[in-house]
Image 1 (tube, one colour):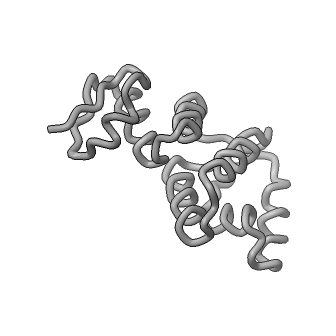
Image 2 (tube, one colour; image 1 turned 90 degrees about the vertical axis):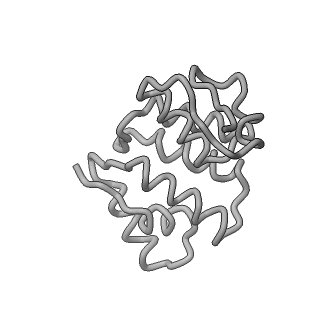
Length: 131
């Protein structure tokens, strides 16, 4: 299995460098690829800030990417929740924090971010509270 770095995903999704795009496409013909949560987190940030992709565009790209039969992530169910929550308006990193707390059995996530607390309400088992 081959792990894929952020820059490979960015080239694949943006096609901003034709040579690297072709190499990324060739890599994605491999039978087994792994994309870590941290790579997806960084990819979302790069696509949003450097390329001004909308959240909807990022969600669509991630769903297509993770729907490829040769691509696996560490916890596919958790990643689906993160993508769903992001699609529903939660910041991608905040969605990842919330899902990670849940997968580790935490009952609460303490934050100073009131907006995060409001947006997280009713999502998942872990309660986000402002300290």
